[in-house]
Length: 183
Length: 183
Image 1 (cartoon, rainbow over the protein chains, first blue to last red):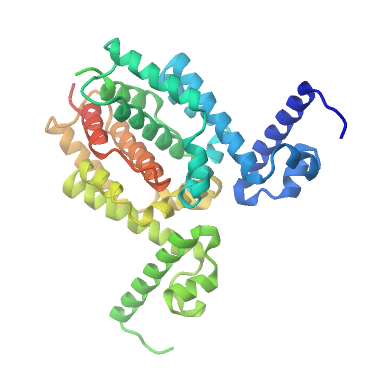
Image 2 (cartoon, one colour):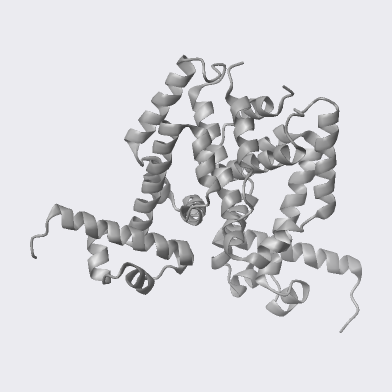
């Protein structure tokens, strides 16, 4: 095999993930066949699967990227920014709905999902703890309860936006603030 | 055709919906083939489709039933009871995730979904108005914002439960109360 530089591999990887994202968004997980992946990515199946051994690995890599992006946004700009981001209806929402459904029936995916981005999980937990410490979050409930509530809201907003019902950005932000405010 | 009584038709309809529910829960929407419907329901495709002309009609009838059941529970016992009900992980959660995903790409289904159970929608709206009137709900936001927030929470809880992550029943109830409490 020819020796390829790390930069080249990185470019290829990006090309593959971007094409796969478009394919999943357009055809759904089930409908994304190998020929469709090849067409969207512009590489042969051999090249694609040398980077990601299967369709589910491509899917997991994209879901992990999305989770990381939302985490970064939350830490940098807060939950309001996350709500607005969902309100922008990015392409990843459809993918997200596919994941939710597949997690139900695929224990292996569920396990991978729960071990995504461990560093980001820690940073999110630390940020919540810091906010609680600073009196910006209620302290009569555990951090776990607060974090899970934000997760539920995120999923619910993704479903509503995913179904193309739109979301009530300002109302949601006001209600979440009241939910989390110190008592 | 032989004349069949209304009671007989009702029994058949129940048999069909119950079998279809099991089939969808087990195999997902895509995986529910006509032979699987026949096997689960115990009737021929001719008999089944004389009641519900297609797979999507069966699916819609079940989704409409679920929506009605949750609405009744909400009106009779409040949102806490709905959260507990989701926590029980009933079989319909998988179906619900399938709906969310299909709403995204099927404008016809979306239209049907939005016109489900018009009477229940009115009753839910009236109940929220009554609670706001009685000072049990905040009045600085519109009923529409409050209702949509509850819808988002419901969807998010369904996703978490659907993915088999479980839900934090008591924490959620406490947070929702704070969100909705009069200011």
